[in-house]
Image: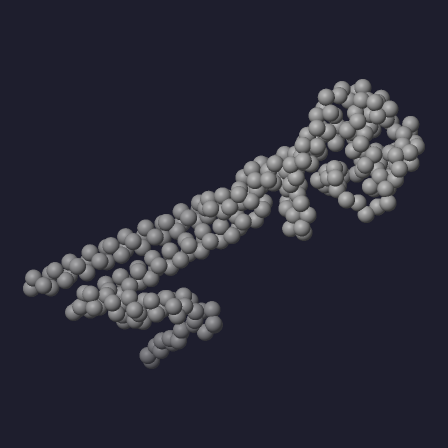
Length: 300
């Protein structure tokens, strides 16, 4: 009895068929699987041009021409991938965060600048040199004081006129008396980082302003420690605002510089270079073999 060998007949699943289709190597000059019709067309055209250039006479010469065409198409694919990587990196570098990172690594300032940019996009001015000067003067007034000497609101009224004007203005705009305003600003249960916004000394308000008398009627209730904490916090926020505004003033130019200097991930670039080098070596080796065969054929 003879043994019958049952052949598999090839893969049955769609996945298996796709894998199998990639395993076969066809030596025809135009038969090849490529990523898309554009690559297939480029390969076919390259083969035709190489045939004109080298006029192959033997099967091995035709195979080498096929390999040259393959290397050529792959080199062009690698170049397209590299170009796309630089385009993508350049597009990502346009994001305002990238420009901010290049100027300063302080995350809090980054966040404030991002807020300022968003405000600018809504049509509100975000950089005003006069306001910056006012902020510098106010911060200097606060920093000049020994805050432990601030015994109450009376001290601010007597020795800190700019701080007094700023606080009264903020209370009036927000419809809060002095005690409520300082309490809100120094309440440790609040997350101060979430509520900090750019300090706009001359900013508009939709609230009905309070009079100074209404604001300071309970000023004796304001604890000196709370007032000291507020002034310290105000100075810190003003310092951040000044630095952020100065950065913001040069941000457009900086954004363009970051975009122009953007480089893709070094590991991806290195991988692309390895692919290119390997393909160039294959191209050079194949071309050398083809030229050597032609020389031998011509000598015969």
